[in-house]
Length: 91
Figure (tube, rainbow, N blue to C red):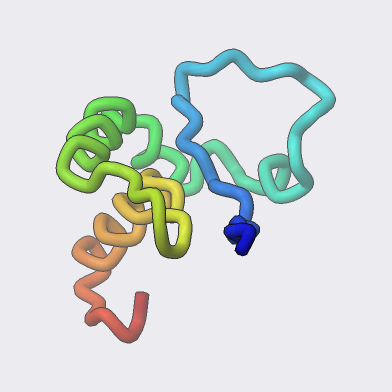
């Protein structure tokens, strides 16, 4: 009997904020964010590479199950949750 392989959803890999960007390839959402937005200002102050490295060491990728979300999304959600004093249902 031949073993079938499972088709998995594409992974959302982490992209360093230090990565160079090419002009003309921005998403419409990216263009609508004002540089003075409080979350944009905060995101520039956070050491994302260090946080993602710490998160990835404690939570290594697994070969089975649902692919993990981008660590920056997870860390950002926790930061927003605590800054706005929200509970788990509101984030």
